[in-house]
Length: 149
Length: 215
Image (cartoon, rainbow over all chains, first blue to last red; front, side, top):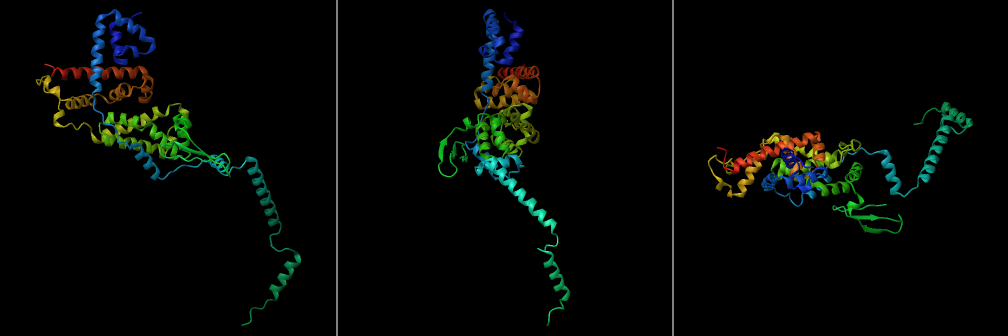
């Protein structure tokens, strides 16, 4: 199946002068049309010439160190990343080559120790080891008459 | 595992045993980070090496587009640098969940920066030898290739902004219609229409110029 001249012109503008590079679904009908209608050859030649003109457009390549410049500029900028706790934890594990199980055991031991510590601390608010010790200290305080100058 | 990179992102040191042995292998960063998306996720964690690899991979490509849009080497370089530094400062700006390729999104960033820049400086400071050919000048004026380039540049910059962007993406960058449409944020049909209108207008103007002006 071929395409009419108008359709061919449209595709020519859309996909360029090289019909072999057109999308697969219209390529074969484009090539058939090109063989069937001699006037289309002239259109293709004109389009190719126009594309050549477009390709003469001026272009200046970037400095060879453009990438290095960008990379260096990034290094000097203050990195404001919000550290993800999960990522941080993973990094720590990887850095010290710790297994998750070992970390879990150590963490649980610490938590257990803290709980015991707080329990003992709250059960003895006065801070004295025994009731006798407390009474003796109280008596000393009551009998205290000040320093002798 | 410990990783050490140089700026080319090519040297990596892996420790097999954290206490004793270490082996050093050279791995092409492209193999280690096959896609841009994995590089971005490393950049999110603060990896400067991943950033360096991304810049090495794409800076020239984005520079090319920036240059085409603003026609000034220094400004185009600055714009590409700004765009990459924005990414470095805020890598979360690119959302992988939106299923847009990194390059598609970044093209858009660069284009927006270029268009903002153009608004600021009111581009096209053509020197006197880039003036449009006199209607009666004839074709001998075309002998100067430099002048031809300048005229072509001017004709392209006279096109509406979206047509220019479409032409640059599809013709000069060789992107597919789908990708270019995604970058500009239009449907494929609309993109094709932009390209066709751009080429038709440009062809008319070029032909008029080549004939030494319409009489």
